[in-house]
Amino acid sequence: MKRHDVRKSVLGLILMSGMGAAHAADVFYPQPGEVCDRVSHLCADRQGISMGLTELHLGKSAMDKLQQAMGDGVGVHMDSYTLSNGVYCESKTQTCYSDRFKTRKDATATENLYGQPAAHAATVFFPASGVICDRKSSLCADASGISLGLTLSYLGQAAQDKLQQALGEGAGVDMGTYTLSNGVYCDSQAKACYTDRFKTRLDFQTTKRLFH
Image 1 (cartoon, one colour):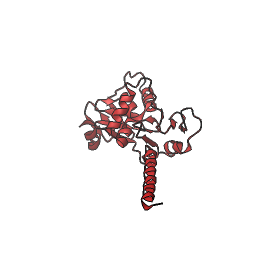
Image 2 (tube, one colour; image 1 turned 180 degrees about the vertical axis):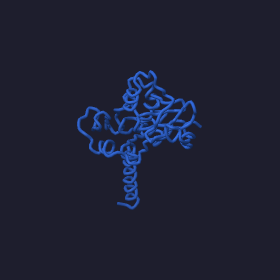
Image 3 (cartoon, one colour; image 1 turned 120 degrees about the horizontal axis):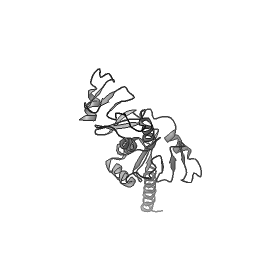
Image 4 (cartoon, helix red, strand yellow; image 1 turned 45 degrees about the horizontal axis):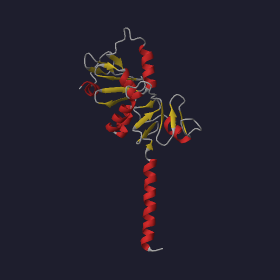
């Protein structure tokens, strides 16, 4: 084989290898308990599809595409989805399968997504400007107070259902004041968050990120 032909063959193998790697990277796991899909423009955690994680790992344009695809959310199942590689994940059973017909369990995807809890996943975090979420308390809020819509967008359907159950009919419930799992107490009317519900002292960082 001529040197030129050898170089062409090697180059072809490199290109094919690169294409395979690029395809494999379409679905990836930023950290344990999270999966992202570049082709489908989505990220999810154990609770299901997450707008917040999508924006964090894939960018705002991906989140916008996901929001557009979901429309008003009616009839959309945030807790079950099919990735671009065909793998189907279901939060209810905490399992991923080889396809949406559940032909067989995908052990690797299941372990990566539903295995050990993500050590670095912050319990209380700010998915967007003026929005705070608490994974442990299953709630998200903005400057106006607790929001079922934001909870659905950033924590998933399961979290929204838990919040709805906790709120009941909403009678007598003050959506504008709440205590986070880290003890921080926020008051939307006062536009401030405090270190505890007794308002011992102002929590400057949380107040700044939520209300300013």
